[in-house]
Each structure stands twice: as C-alpha cells, then as structure tokens.
Figure (cartoon, rainbow, N blue to C red):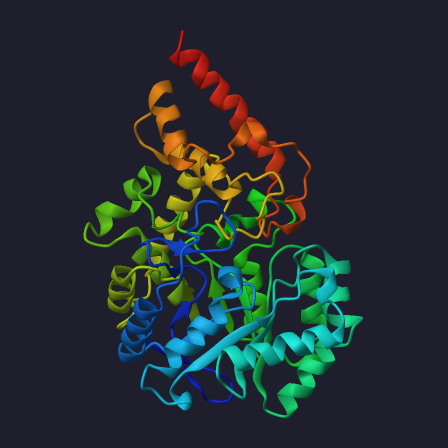
Length: 414
C-alpha cells in the first residue's frame, strides 16, 4: 500500500474507504433515497468482511457521514471496525458535520450530531472531522451552518481538546465559501480539505459550470498553503469507471489490461499533496482491484497525463450531464428517481453504437422500471436544484429527456 503523511506525521493510506454506497442483502446498495437504490437491509456481515479485507490490505482511512445511507452509515461502519480485530490506533475515522437542514443549524443540534457520531462509531474521538459540503447552497447558507451559530469555533475547541484530531471541510458549490476558508486559514489552521478531483474536473470543472472552480486551482491553492488534499469523486460517480467508448479509445491502447478506474485513481495519486483518495467500494471485486492499484500506486508520467487530458476532452464533447449519483437531490417530492433519469441520457451518449428508438425506449424502461415515476411526471418545482453539488439545472435536463422520449415513441411507432 502506498502511504502519505499528515503534517503531524500520521501515516495515511493513499486509498481510503468511502462508506456512502453500502452493499445490501439483496446484492444492491444503499445510497440515499433514490428509487434505484435498494431499500433492503445493509449487509452487515459482508461489510464486516470487506472492512477486514481493507485493513489487512493496508487501508486505514474510513470516511462516513451522518447523512449517508439514510443515516445508517456511521453505525454500520462503527460495528465493522469494532469487529475487525484491529485496535483503534490502527485506523483513522473521518466523519462530518452534515447539518444540511435549517432545523440542524443551531449549535445544540451540531453538538448533538457530533455526540451521536461518537456513539455510532464507537469511539471517543474523531481523527478527521469535516464541515460537510461548505459551498452547497451558497455563502449565506455556509454562514448560517457554521459561522453565525458558532459551530466552527466549537469544532476548533474540540480540536484543542483532541476530541477532534484534524479539522477540515469538503467543498462543493459556491466559490465564496472556499475563498473565505482560504482567507481565514491563518485563524482556523485547516488540517486538510476534501475536494472533487479527477482528470476531467482538473481543468474543465468551470467549463461544465461557470460557478465551479477547477480542481487544478483548488489543489494548487491548498498546496501553496500546505493544506493536504483528500480526493472525493475520483471516478465522477462511476462515470470514469464504466465503459465509455470515448475514454476507452484514448486509454485502452496504452494499457489494454488496465481498467478505466485504474487510470482515474493513478491520476489522483500522481499529485504529492494528495493525502488519500476515497472510493465507495460496494463490491468485494472493487476492493480487490483497488488494493492491487494502490499496492503500490504507479504515478502517471507526462505522456499519460496528456492522454488523460485528451480523454477528458473526448468525454466532454459528448455533452453528458455532470451527475455523480450522489443523491443529494433526493427524495423528489413527486417520486421521480432523478439520478436514474439523468443516467439514462448519459448512457445513450456514451454508447459507441447509436441505439434505435425502440432500443432506447427499452433502455429507458430498464433504467427506470415500471412502477417508478419517469421524466414526464416532473412538475418543475425546482426543489432539487439547491441541493445539487454539481449545480445542474435538474428540471431543465429532465424536461429535455421527456421530449427525447416523446421523440423516440413517435419514431418507434410510426
């Protein structure tokens, strides 16, 4: 396993485990409230085995949140770590102040959330504690969640008491929140920062949405301030791991045996200020492959970085929707499976062979099965938009997909 080091000398595995898409007993996964995610029980026995396999393979960074898996993630991870046979000193736990709802803004609620995290994770301290998604909802929301209520100052006090060992934040959305944190680094002394970084967002995040900040800028800004980087979305919600002819055309000839996921992980690990790269490993096969990729990780050379940039440009030329299937937009008040509907369009765009109208309709029904509400049921209420870290205009995209489906129906049944 390849390791990196914190400023205080802690040895952290470059591969980190993200407990966001936990396997369920029906062979699927639990991820938020999406209709495509399983409502079955999380498979605790499988998770216990997977966590033990990760620890045996040298992984020691485990990331969770009170918001993940319908509130189950912390408790399930706490149980798996407790049953692993490893001592508390052998692994790091990262969790978050995920106070997204206005009712959670008061400081007493933040304290209660933190105490619950300690209880569920079976620990009396947190190694890495994050202000969760600081730019989501804009700077005013950031201020209400962390500044006006005194939550950030309280977290700093817990760090002084060593109940929190490292304090940082994850960033999505409004650049003002990130810039404020950088400007105030001298006061708060951020120990780390979690950003969305991959070979597409490296130079093209702002191209996808002008309000975004490119990962290259984020990384260099943090590096200049000596703030270690934790990577989230190294695979863009799986889009850089699933077969895509545009990516495969550029990358497969260079290493036919390498998966697309391996290329994406190698990109992130090339940069020395990256502390760890999070991967939501639902399947045991994902764990096996990732352990091989990171043991040790082979950094990309200059020619390979050029190839990855070419692959990024090829993917962007397809005009896919930048949905990472995080499910922050869910639940939809009208019962739509928003991520599944957006994924349908992306699947069409990334398929090398153009599907016929009938084949496209069959794919649509497979992606959003009968009984679930599809694109035509969207009312355009826009309640989903403020929650999207990627700042997608979700109702507009769904309306476009609805018109696309109508076109397929007209063509298929002429």
